[in-house]
Length: 114
Image (spheres, rainbow, N blue to C red):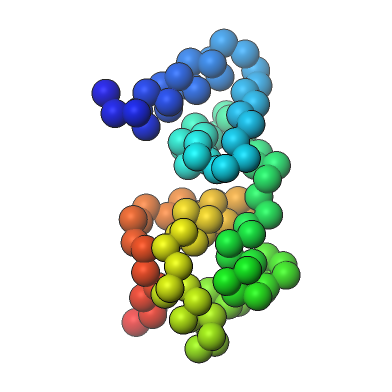
């Protein structure tokens, strides 16, 4: 069993034992695992979803500014995204919490839309 699967199974068991599971995760290590637990009957609320990496790289102050910059980045924003490998994990969380989309990708680089 891989460590990721171990934690996912552990969190799922804890959630089944009670009506609520609180996961203090200041470094975001378990964010994707916990996000995957969310289903129709279970809502995941990320209290620390301030997206510091995306805000900093894109020089964006709000979710709409982040979305605009991701869809049509300036040259400076595009270069910042290309030089950083940590933003895709935050993008997955952003897409799920703000847009209701689950991204299934492991990319580390920004590719323009065709």
